Every structure is written in structure tokens, then in C-alpha cells.
Image 1 (cartoon, helix red, strand yellow):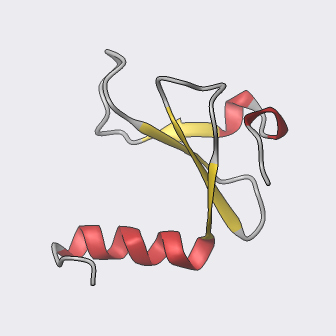
Image 2 (cartoon, rainbow, N blue to C red):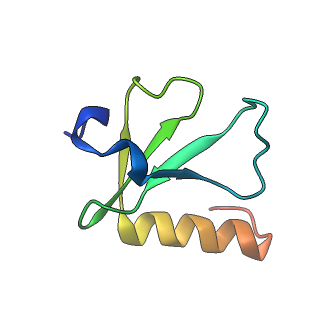
Length: 70
């Protein structure tokens, strides 16, 4: 299990499409091997979901393609 405290604050980033007004965003950290941690930007001390890197890459590719996930 990965916790927010295990990832340096400077490692988290959110999409360049996200505004700075505290909207509904997720943040990711690219500093953990083999997984991509994801958290809610409104609750930085909250839970972290860790997705295997290939699964996250596939998810993003599907979103970019405009196809529905199966």
C-alpha cells in the first residue's frame, strides 16, 4: 500500500488543463516504480490509489482516442 506521506509533495502534479481555482482534479506522481499513484487534489492528505503503470497508460490512451472503455 502506498500512502501520501511516502511520496514527496513536489512529486505530485495535475493536468495542465486543470485550473488553479481548486476544481475537481486528480493529481498523479511519476516517482514510484511500476505504479502510478493518484489522489484527489482537494484532499492531498487523503487516500492514494495506485494503478499499475500499463493499466494507467491504457486508460489514458483510451480517453485520448475517444473510444469507450470496454
